Amino acid sequence: MPRIVAPVVALAKGGRGVRLTILGGGGFRVPLVYGALLGDHAEGRVSHVTLYDEDSGRLSAMARVLADQAAAAGVADAPAVTATGDLDEALRGADFVFSAIRVGGLEGRAADERIALAEGVLGQETVGAGGIAYGLRTVPVAREIARRIARTAPEAWVINFTNPAGLVTEAMAEELGGRVIGICDSPVGLGRRIARLLGARPQEAWIDYVGLNHLGWVRGLRIGGRDELPRLLADTEALESFEEGRLFGAEWLRSLGAIPNEYLHYYYFNRDTVRAYREAKQTRGAFLRDQQRGFYAEAGRAGQPAGAALAAWDRTRAEREATYMSENREVAGVGERDESDLESGGYEKVALALMRAIARDERATLILNVRNGSTLSVLDADAVIEVPCLVDANGAHPVGVAPLPLHAVGLVTAVKAVEREVLAAAASGSRADAVKAFALHPLVDSVGVARRLLDGYAAEHPGLAYLR
Image (cartoon, rainbow, N blue to C red; front, side):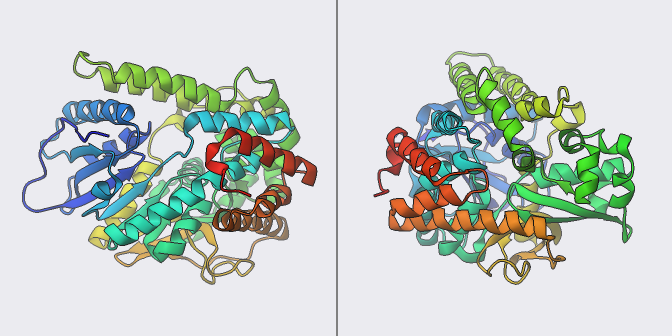
């Protein structure tokens, strides 16, 4: 693929600066990361961004969007942007590598959903059968990328946002150890909403959050050393005034004594959600596939006026965010998402805070996906978990947390066992291990279904040909 140089701006003056490489650089959410970088003017900021993607058309379109962003921001020292289809070239000299790849594209995601729903089980891209299928074709690629990083940019820190994020982070950690850290915007958004309801600034609250990626709970929220979550759980009106409260309902949240991550709706209301997804006009993956085809065609069109690509991206993003988890809200009987739930400030700000903390030794507390160590006694040291971490120049260090209640232990250990079978299958090529991964998942209720799922996915995805 020819090398593309995006028409942004020159490197920041006064030194080399920090170099960031984005894998999946043609991906739709790249402008969120670049927008966060444009707002960072401190010493030691990112001065150069390299976009890597195998799709030259998507790279060209994204280069136009970022150029429009830099022009609109009017920032004199905006990070320079280059784009390439050569992975080693993209990695060479990187200080940070942001991984946000999608193996199989949105066409693959749509197929994952369709095949699972035909068997009457959930096909969501990170939860249940869909997440397993996505993991089986992504883990081998993620491992190879990790090996390339270890050879080409051994001093780089890797920030993983590739889904399923916890599973992929654990796979990459086999090669990179603690130099790969997974991020997710769900815990951040949940903590922010709870803190504001309790009248606190989110950055001043300590969020007691624990679990796996897309399988965690807020068990406490301390403001000035006092846990204020019981006050929220006692207030039905306040509980049902925000996204997770409306999804789960005040009665169930009080029963749990915690606020679950929104993705636990797929577990707690599984039958209802599967029914809603089967009755939907179009699955989420199919919607995003069709939506993004239109966006990339428009953004990549030659001869457009300045700002047109960014305007197209803004329109597409607004529609994307407004329709997020719409089937789950239908099950819960709630309407459209509140404007406060649509605001930015998610994973891109977590990524920026993480890079700042490491590059400048600016200590920060962030909810991240990292190796367990001795944090959760029910899991081994290498298991990647999602918990608050203290971050400094030496990386992310998980904070000690209280033991999980038994209902959470059951889900966390069961899903971690599934992840381990995915890792084993990806390493061995064993069909038996892959079937076991499907069959052990709490949302797949039959070994026979597991076998048919694997047959369906293997027929659809050439990337699963390694399973024998």
